[in-house]
Image 1 (tube, rainbow, N blue to C red):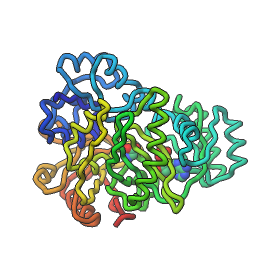
Image 2 (cartoon, rainbow, N blue to C red):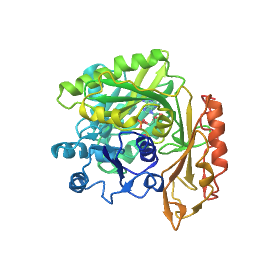
Image 3 (cartoon, protein in one colour):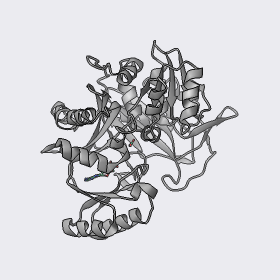
Image 4 (cartoon, rainbow, N blue to C red):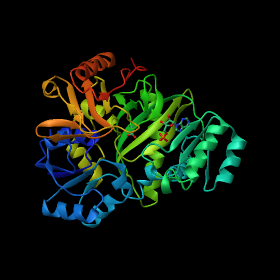
Length: 420
Ligand code: AMP
Ligand code: GLY
C-alpha cells in the first residue's frame, strides 16, 4: 500500500516508524521536514491545510490510505474531502471530530447518552457564566469551548481564579474557541487515558497511558502539550477498562452512528477514575502526543492493516497484540518552553542511540541542516524506551537522555513517578 501520513511531530514520527515495519507498505509519504520521519518516508511538500492539494497529491501518487495525525485537519474536514474524492483516510470526519472540536458538543452528547462525566453549564456571555460560578463555588473548571491547543482549560481553586479565566475567554484570548465556555464540576481521582480504535460501529481497545502535562517536576508549573508519558497506566484495571467501554465508549459510538456521523479513527478518552469508577473528562479525536510514542513502542501487531480496517469499516474481529512490558517516553524541550524559546541550537549524540535495544528517539521539533540536527520547536525530542518493569523503562529512557548532548534543552527528571 502507498500511505500518506499527515503531520510531522513526534506522534507522526512514531506512527511512521511503526508503519515502516509493515510488510504491506509499499511507499510512505509525509508532510513537513521532520528528519526522523524523512529517514523513513518521501517528502510531499504539500500544505496540510490545502485539502485540494492533498487530494491531487493522493491521485498523482496512487495513495491507498491517508493517515491523519493531528486534530486541526480532522476538525477542518480533511477526511470528508478525501472521501468525496474516493480516497480512504484514517481519522474521523468533520462532524464526529467535534468530540474534540467542541467541549459543549461532547457534554451534550454525554447528557443525551447518559455517559458518566462532570456536571456542567454552557454559557456564551460573561454575566451568566459568573452567576453560575457564584452559585456553584470553587473549585471549579473553566473550559473554552473550541480548539485551544491544550491551553483552554483552567482548574480554578478559587472564585477569583475562575473569574480571571472567564474574562480571558470572553476577552478573546482563545479567539473563536473562547466565544462560549463550558463550566464543569471539579472531579477528584486519578487521571488516565485509554485509546480505542473504532470503525464507526466496532471498537477495539488499544492500550492505556498516562501523561504529564505540567512543565515542572512534581506536576507543577504551566501546562504543556505533554512532557512525558508511560503505558500501561496502572490505574486502568481490566474492570475499569470494561466499565469505560460499556458506559462511555459504546454509547458514544452508538449515538454518533445513529446520527449518521459514525466515528472512525482512534478515540482518545481522558478519564478521571475514583472508587465510583471512570468518568469522562474529555475526548480527543487522534492519538496523544507523546502517548502515541509509548503505544507504538508496545504494539506488536502490524499497524497498517488496523488503520486501514478502521478507515474502511472492517474492524470487527480485529485483535491487537501488545508487549506486556511497559514503555516510557521523556520529552526533551527547548529551554524556556512552554514560554518563548530559541531555535537553531545543535543536538549531538543521537547516532550513538540508533542501535540501542528497545530505545527509540522520536523527533518532534527538529530540522536537519548540513548533516546536523538542530532544535526547531518547543518539544524537540521524545526519548522512548521499553523494559520489563516501569522502573527499568524509566532508567533506560533517562540513560538515553543523558547520552544526548544539547545544553539548550531540558527535560523533567521524574516522568512516571506515580507508577514507579
Ligand atoms: P482537558 O484539556 O479537558 O483534558 O483538561 C486539561 C486538564 O484539566 C485535565 O487533564 C485535567 O487534569 C484537568 N481537568 C479537566 N476537567 C476537569 C474536571 N472536571 N475536574 C478536574 N480536573 C479537570
Ligand atoms: N498529550 C496530550 C495530548 O496529546 O493531548
